[in-house]
Length: 392
Image (cartoon, rainbow, N blue to C red; front, side, top):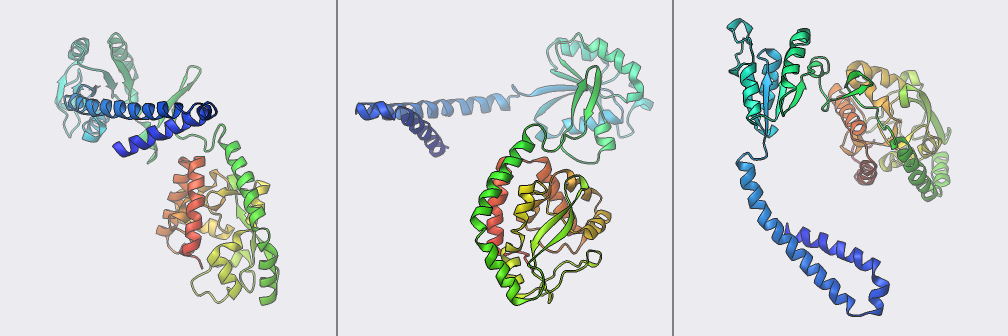
């Protein structure tokens, strides 16, 4: 878009001006050169894009950038591979199915049109008509796979062997990669959440941002404590046991919002209009101020600012029986807020569908964690607190 392009070029020019500002102040004509550079850069980039876009569009429509992929094998595995490669959204040119065993008893009952045999595949690849070849044979045919792979290795094409374990043993999830430890080949089912530098980044985020929030909100603590004490008898704050990282039990701090604290074995989630909640408690829950003491859990390293919200132990057990993937939430530290909360899955989880929606959001967060995502969730949490959706 021309407008966005101009803004990008202008920001780049302003950045350069900032570096050259001391000399620019001494020489007035430097501002003229900056204006000329901005104008020339914008014009040349816009012209380049205007010419390149239709050219590449025509080349793409003509298939000049398509990957040409052929499949060797005509069984059930090949059917699944062929069905996937034939989808328009995949963006490749399917160069056909090849197999030496073309008798009707060898084919998938659903039927696959066989383009040719192994020799035909070799000839077509030598004519530079194929970029990649996928050997789609069952693992039990290991000797045949090795023989075919040896013959195909001489071709100027990349060779792949289907590892169909991904879809047979793992129901859903992101694309899987292969790796190796020495000479041992591995199928990467999942990566460790928050690996490498990620734990350090997230811990610094919790300490710096969490510390700042504590400093800003600390004056509210005595005011909240006084309001709770004046309205009802009982402790100002209390602890609830929750499962944290790797199912470890932690003691989570909260301001008391009810007239009494339920025994953990009989703990019942708060509902709209719950008569156990005090007047002050309703305000605290509506504004999420009852969660402020958890900042100390964050600073201690038991929790994080952002992560799956922890549930009571008794509810953990109940929800775990209702949703098979529930335990996945414990791969990271629990959070004061999370992706599920800003998506609207906040408050009482009354049905298996609501619990599953919350768990799916938590799993999305774990798989896609980034510092930017945490900041986005924190900002959206402010809006969720303002609207008070599902807060009771």
